[in-house]
Image 1 (spheres, rainbow, N blue to C red):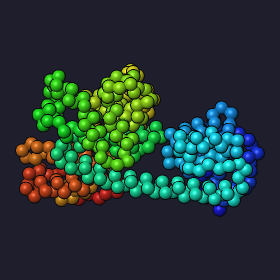
Image 2 (cartoon, rainbow, N blue to C red):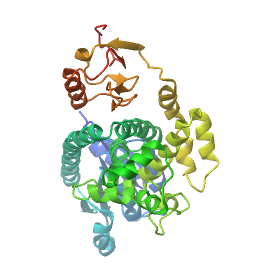
Image 3 (cartoon, rainbow, N blue to C red):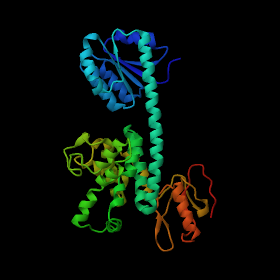
Image 4 (cartoon, rainbow, N blue to C red):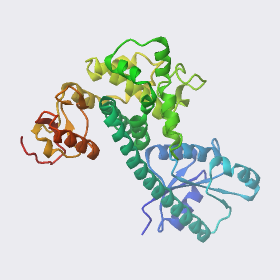
Length: 393
């Protein structure tokens, strides 16, 4: 029975590819590609655990192909097979392409099978470690944003919406959703370092002084610095740093990075934030996307073209129309996962949590603590999690 993980074997000689299938097809799930161009097409349309390629091929050689494999599918384990005459070039290029194993032609079938077994084991290790890392970081970041939500309910609500939009956009782009979501959630964490007076002016929509505007422009930098000590989120940090950078290279940070050299998640954040800002003025989402299309020098046109699946989320935010219908419930019946369809406000007019917030366990407890002091008016208007029964107030 072949393995479930798929191996992509690349060579410009059909006889060699046929030999791979004949000798290894019963043991492994092997897809073959005759030449690097067909291999790249396969990589853009499918997921692979291992890529095994010949070194010398017309057009793109094996080294360049594996460099592109690393960009397209970073978790894919890369292997190369080379003749003796190519050993000098191959050895010098192993580190540049991040090659897991270099095989020498002719390679007996048993030796090749052992190498593929090791590569598949390495891929399982990489994916298991990544899942553990993502789960641990997700929990830590959720706790961090829960605490920030207590300090600034309105900013937390915006971060939640950014995360939902980023997830939808990443899926539309076939990009890593985890990186997009975390970057969106932490994009403006640097605002916690701003003076209280400046944050209050921002909430009130008041005009900023020149010095305040310069300080606000550096929020991505402050966010980047706050994230600097969290291990293994370098791509997220870069996205956060470049979230306000225009596609033509203008804006913060002031460097030579432009176009597609700007991190993909950073370009996505830039477009999402602009879209949210336009929609907050009451502009219908699809019309707002059309406005962004008029600024290709500011927003990556490919990113903007993939924003349309985000429109229903923003439309729902504007109209306050829930998917499952509104429910009025008592504070005692709040549970994580419910979405607030109206602000929770104390009798003194303080916003505890903003409309559109999807409640976490920390937020539910905070609301119930307010309730013990009888400072929050009931009932609350919420959208229920799917298949969640309600107790009417």
